[in-house]
Each structure stands twice: as structure tokens, then as C-alpha cells.
Amino acid sequence: MIVYNGKNLEDFGVTSIGAGAFGSPARDIEQIHVPGLNGDLLFDNGGYQNVEVQYPDCCISGNFPNKFAALRTFLLSDPGYHRLEDDYNPDEYRMAEFRGPLAPDVHTARGYRSGTFTLSFNAKPQRYLKEGAEEIEIQDWATIKNIWMPAEPIFKIKPGANGTCYIAFDGGGGGSVYVKDSTGENDMVYEIDMATGVAVRYKEAQSGTRYNAASSVDSGLFKIPPGEHVWRIFGIGTPQAWVKPMWWRI
Image 1 (cartoon, helix red, strand yellow):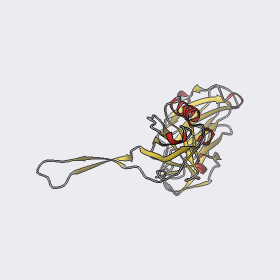
Image 2: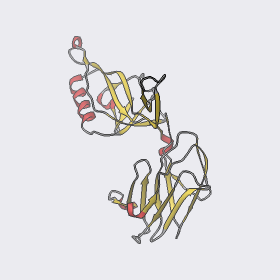
Image 3: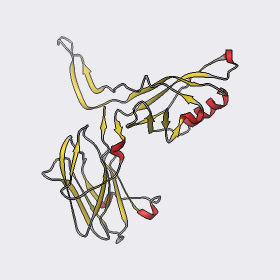
Image 4: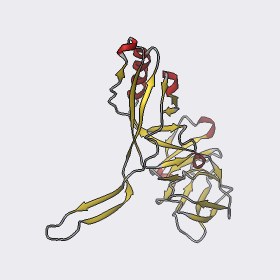
């Protein structure tokens, strides 16, 4: 089973095998050869490259022309990164794009009723853990443990009307987040995605309407390093905060 951009591809009659779903990305390393020097110079840029995730030998076994037309229209109609899941790695998901092309092997002996093809996705290197996308309320002096890679969390903060909220780890490390509300609204929410640096503000009851909150937020590149950490949260008023840790592995 493959689920992409919220759609189970079995809805198009697709069956698949997961032979290409277990690979890893390459480190982002620049290799330079200097004439006369034995051995190349290596410069590690500190990250990982995108990885191609392939599902070979996908099959549609009936009504192939219509179902395949619907499949390719769906896959190619919404460019950019979307969530990609499969049942070969049930506890994780990727952020991936599909750009094509599609080159099916149509079974002419069966009157074009079936065909096989490879689905290939361009994925970010992270294998995000589904448990890391679950929201956890932050409590002062509570412990959080990261057994994976350094994570870039998503914060949801309610400082309260004209209140403030400061979040960090006891003893430093990871960075800090500071939010100051100037709207006078008790139910105003500030959401900060540390992977993108985007901060938005919205009312919980009207979450479809979002506004730029950059002027109300002061944060660096907050990360949750591997290890055990203790949250600190305080401010003016009675601030509340939640976090999606966004755990990931390679």
C-alpha cells in the first residue's frame, strides 16, 4: 500500500511491492581532487542529499487505461513535497514529490486491461517518525528524550492576551523561543516551524485564517539534540505551549 498526498493509491487499483523503500540517502559531501596530492579532499556540508524512493513492478490489473489516466493526473497535478507513506515502513513517513515521467508496460496480450510500472519519488532524506508528529503539551521541568537525529520541532504557543512565553531547555542547548502577544486575544495561537523558520498567528476557532507572526516571535534555530532534556517554560500571564518533536532517522 502506498499513500501519497493523503490519497491511497489502491483507490486507482495500484498494487505494489516495497523493494525500493528501504534505502538510505548519501551524505552531502564535496570531493575535490588536487593534482599531485594523494587522495581527494573531502568537505562534509553537514547534511544529507535527497533520495529516490522507488516502488518497482507496481500493477493495475483491470481497466488499465482509465485507472492509469486517473493515477497520472493525480500524481502530476499537485507539484511540491507531500507526505508519502507505505505499509513496508508503517511507523514512519517521508516528504516527497512526484515529477514523473511514467512509462508503463501495458499488457497487450490482455487487451490493454492491465499493466506494470515503476513509481519513483524524490524524497527528502528524513524518515519522519509518526509518533514525532503527535502534539505534546510542554510542562515546566518536564523531560523529553530524543534517541534519533537532531530534530526541528513545531511549536504551538498560547501566551494569553498581551502575555509572553519563553521556552528553552534547562542548562541551555537547542536554542530558545520567545513569543509576545500584542493582540489582546486570549485564544490567539502562535505556530513556529523550526524546519522552515515560518511563524504564523491564528485564532483556534478560525484556524483557516493565518497571519504572519514574525514580529511577535524571537527564536533561533531551535533543535532538540539527541539525549535527555528538561523543558523550561515561563512568561507573563499563564502561557501554554505544545510541541510536535518531529523525530526522524535516516
